[in-house]
Length: 137
Image (tube, rainbow, N blue to C red):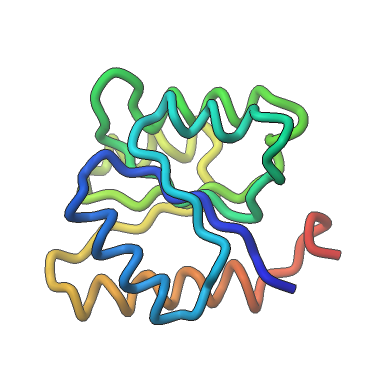
């Protein structure tokens, strides 16, 4: 079964790198939101199928990743979607806050593209191939 991924990131360079890595993984159903509000608009649209995984940047203007995460966890239709924080911040306070707000996992984006691609492939392989949850039964 093809998994649907929602990538939420305001940085066009990071989006391009992530899409390149995701395309390498041969994932076809990838939706990109360039802001927190756009992500919520996509998630709440009744015409859109809910994603199987959300890759969410933490540091975004106007509506940061924590606000998006809070909205996802508060919505009964969305609350069980795994949300992997994919961010440049390795600060302990950010990591703790994300888990306190309901993040499923926290991955720091490596600066090197090869390492970034490998981190993303490993993350995706776990969530789309190895992990079993009621959503995927």
